[in-house]
Amino acid sequence: MPLTQDVELIQSEIRMYLESLPNLKGELTILRSSFIPDDIFLHGFTTRTGGISYIPTLSSCNLFSSSKRRDPQVVVKENLRRLANAAGFNPEAFHRVKVDHANAVYIMGKTEPDSYDGIVTNQKGVTIAAPGADCIPVLFADPVKKACGAAHSGWKGTLLGVSMATVNSMVSEYGCNVKDILVVLGPSVGPCCYKLPHESAKEFHRIDPKCVRLFDSASPYIDIRRATRILLENGGILPENIQDDSVTDQDQNVTFCTACHPDKFYSHFRDGTNFGTQIGFISIKD
Image 1: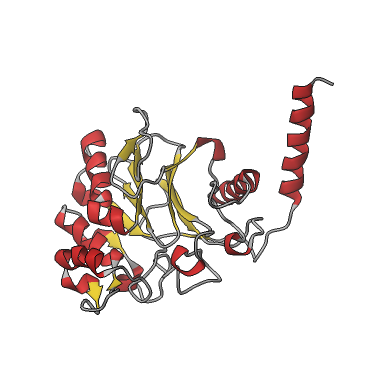
Image 2: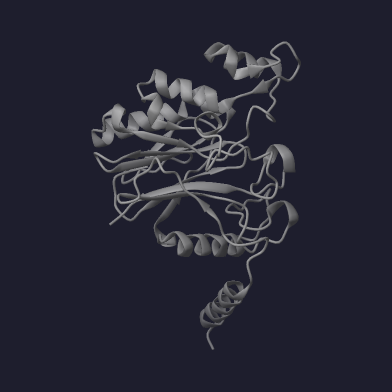
């Protein structure tokens, strides 16, 4: 048998074996927002359950692999396949942002930057996604122009305005009206848990003093969600079009604190360097 056929056979057997493995830590769970109309968009936020990643801090539905976070790529690919199967999207038409903790935005169909934290599209059947493991996965939907976006907003990206950069790309590329765009902040570290050095905290204090707790301490608590909301509202997004459950819904169906819920979410802040990743994803239905 030629070598390439050998390799293909082995790869096929590995895939079949991985597909046969049981879910770890419970069923695959997708959190959905009532803000985003499900007759136009498919969307959701993942949790850490229902995959096959076996390393404790990555277990079980980790969706990112790198040289630093050594979850085998075939395992991550199988986790994505299970998610796609459960959510109803094509994993072969899936595009996740290439995180740079900055504010570049990739407009699908144009030249892809080397790295970017926002992504927008008006193509049907293409699923776009942003990761988060404390950083905010932010989803954007315009039901009028039928366009959508996803952004990864950590503390650096928040200060650099990645969310408004994503909104502005939707406006300039697809003719969206800023007042029609719906924004959902996904699971992310809350001000109950997240600390930054005082110098970085100053930048959040400038946006709004209420974004910082214990400002005079060496490591104040930071509210990156509040800062994101304020910057979006300053850019013209209607306050009632932003979902942040920590202020709008005390039952909390999507904006949980990742650090507070080790059973539900990954957290870099809590778990250290070998941390898992959940995502927020969205697509326009065919």
